[in-house]
Length: 322
Image (cartoon, rainbow, N blue to C red; front, side, top):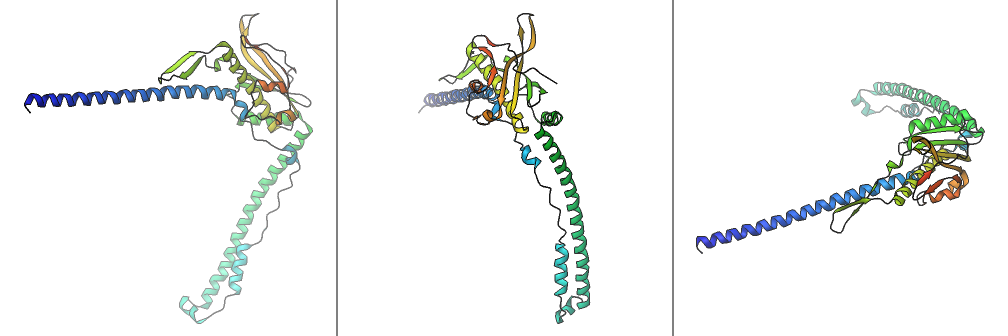
């Protein structure tokens, strides 16, 4: 083969390699596009799920009736275990011929006697530590008993104390900006300030068969329904937390949203959902499977909602009190 033939072969090989590189590059680009669009869709779906399933993660339950009757922590036992073991070893000591190679019987007995003294000291220290821990346990037990009895009696100050502790330990950012509370004679009325409808994405995302990401404006009806699910989920979450941390049979939740008042033309905190939750009915709910908006039918509630206009002002079922 002449040099021209050789060059043509090299050129053909180069073109083939270039085509293969371009093919792989397109495959990589397509894979990246699929991964990017798939991730974007997953993020969108995860956000929708997060804001409409707040109610599935409620506070751990506290049984205040059981706490009110919890027995006193038992006293620690000064059984002197280590001293007993050392005394047993001393009592069983018998001099023999081989002790001479280990310093003599007298030295070994003295060592065992010292071990008895050391063991007694160890046991005393352990007992003193147990007494200190027991004193702490008794103090906590007494505080828990006193608070539990006050809560079971329905004392407003005790209820407020538990609510304030809950607020300091929990993160209510997903529910809204803050949660206010008023306490009645036999109930608590929570009024969370929920997020506005900007918490709902205005665009829908889906991945096309080509792998590309498609974003389209979310229909008004779907947008409003997602926001409705968010608000009702926040109400369920608030009620669930209160039922789990307080011995209450009734909880009112009135969700406030910063919406436009058509009469004044200003954004105002407005009640858009008010619900009277009853413990027995609430505890029978399957929170993981229910539709938050539909679940409102299980309780007396005030909600003016339409798919085309969203929420409107409602009158709270129970007025806020101090």
